[in-house]
Image (cartoon, rainbow, N blue to C red; front, side, top):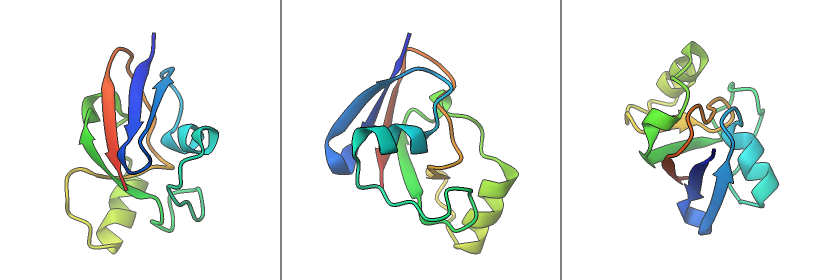
Length: 96
């Protein structure tokens, strides 16, 4: 069972097994979504979850701190390197 992850900027759609990070998915797919530190410290990989947030892991304290530092208050904002697909049979749409 998989969840479909669509990276809207790149016109990519990938079927993903729960447990994979968005960073894993992006690196395997050839997306141009940028990453910096890959550890949730720099904020380079901020994305907007346009739909399907319920299929993603909860926002971590590290994410909250980095998003606050970046003055990012949009509830759709997440760090791609920190979130994981946690549930099957869904659709997640991401913009960066």
